[in-house]
Length: 294
Image (cartoon, rainbow, N blue to C red; front, side, top):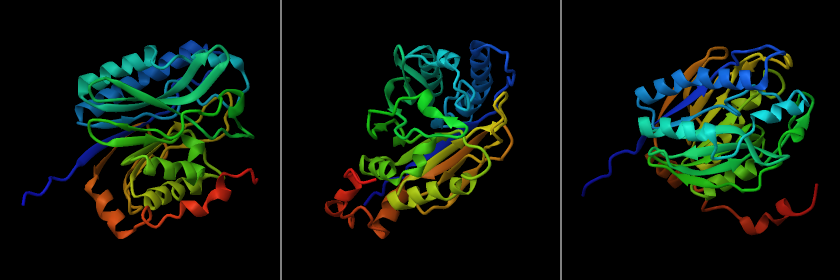
């Protein structure tokens, strides 16, 4: 009997700092500089054979949510729009599926924190809109983002079925489970998070999601500090984690870099046959989770 060859996928995560920390710079200047800084790293990923590449949260801008300045809404654009169309050309050039998180403008005054998914032939497959929106000191996201309304979709790329969770979403296991039930083999979580209270959770929650749901995760965090807000240091350490909770590869805390991770998707079947979490679920007992209780 012929055995199937392993389904090995090379993933890539790009973690970068903002090149312009000038409070007087225009939104357009900051946006364009961040985009231009990414392009050589995207080229590097393509040349190194990356098959699925994910960029960081709102990759073509700073993390502007410490402010409540409406001028940052000027970064928002439709999906698909000019930035996604540009990324489609890169995806097609390198036969590389891409997850591209940007600030989405659906209509005047309606904006989402969104990631577009592009297949390796350049086809736009769809988008995920961040569902859980924080609103606390230094993270005034409800000022800028409407909560997502597209559920927890997964996308069949040439190389794997993938799902997307964005930053604060990672604190909620319910959506992580739904991504697994919807068939995700790899879940990508583009983020912008700084040193402090949540740093220990960065290495705790996402391996836990990977184990509980039997899939790989690619977790991205930007690096550096961003003026004029200076809410802290974005600590990078982007990483891939496998369904056993083991770190496959990891980036540094303070360097711009492309992080590569090789994932053998055959491990998913192997792990799920051992840990039968999907078989042993009891959804009929979980009704209180979706009730109106606090």
